Image 1: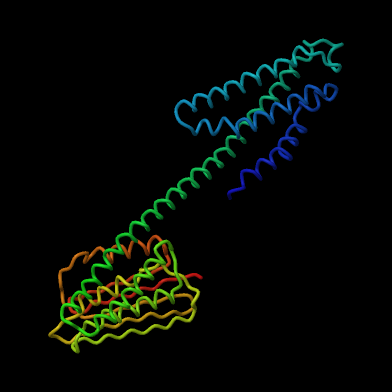
Image 2: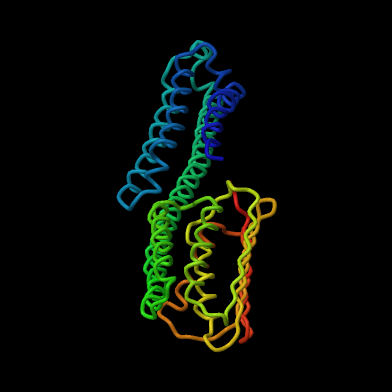
Length: 337
């Protein structure tokens, strides 16, 4: 589609226009006056390429440029009129002896043929020009949308980092405050997780195995601060290691499990599953709900929705169910290597 206007240009210039000129009265009238037919042909080609290269782009430009485009159209009409009148005053061997008046109806017929060819060239060049401008406008729109999406992705990344750090540091603070012996191992895992965040900060996609490993470390860090009232289960089964996924996409849902699914006095269970089959990744979480108001409670999931739409439009299915007792997330994505 991108190169279609060029192919049409070639077809018109090499086939369509020469055939139309050969079938018109011009060729028969000027078979003894090749210079004029040559000039007419050159002029028609000049009109075509002038329209394609200058007139139509100017008409699609800003206000002042539109006037230049209109001026070029008027100029081409005026020059065509002059060219069509020239044939009345140029001696032609086929009619010179009989007199121009005798053949005036034929002259008018040939003028009409020149004007017909001119109008066809105008119409064809404008049609191809409109197609070209449509492609240009579409490419600009897609580029603008791509730039906008890129900016949005970077914005979401910057929002995820402080959000994640606040929640994790809050958990570490609780471990150190209570003198939990797991505090130091948790800090070491947290440093490893921060290294992952740093190395993926400039990447739009990472291997799904790396993201899954990161989630495992996150679950380990969060699990260390839990008591015997909460059990955590995580199962990961990734068959295709080359599949790519946006970094820090899934961890937001895992965060919510620990934010709302943990109670110090009631039994609770958190279940996390990540598995892949034939390029489709399925991610599920399930937890009881123990509402606790925290900073950034809704921001994380909303960012995930937006990132999913940016990276996988029409290629994912996200289902979130909240019946007031349990909170379930089911996400299925078609991934690519």
